[in-house]
Image 1 (cartoon, rainbow, N blue to C red):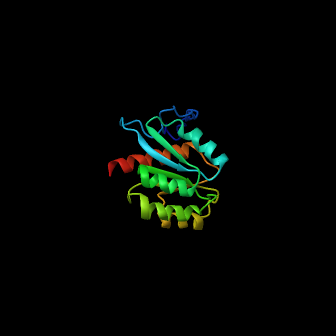
Image 2: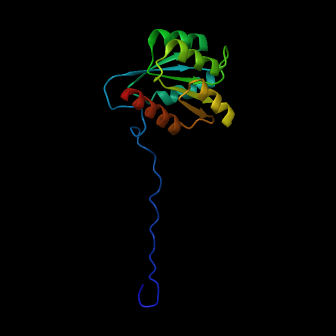
Image 3: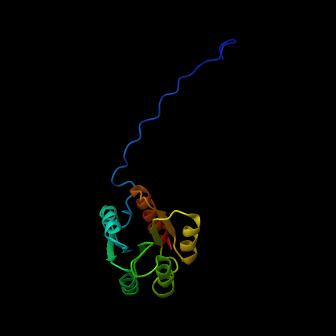
Length: 159
């Protein structure tokens, strides 16, 4: 304060938001090994969207299954480092696939990410209790998928 008058300071505007560089949230370029991620698709639209996102991931070898039965068989045979699946599959409820993956195919520390239409807390809780590590409700946000997959792959690599 100058005498009795308060001093006014003008605050500068925050820098405008910029798009993240392609390397910012991409899972993950830290080590040279390629990690297997199994994607179990629930339909053509979801598959196209997820494959567009996954194409950005250089150190990830993506395995794609068209249904739950094929996904479970691939998980048993290939032991992926992560599974991403659509909640509503044509041949089996996604919750049952999560339980089957946990019981028959995956190590307890292997992350499972569920992509779902319903963001209701009850639906989310059902999948988490079944063994899912993360639940992302649609509409899918590319940055959220990148962040979630990257974080879970890093955590799994530390175990």
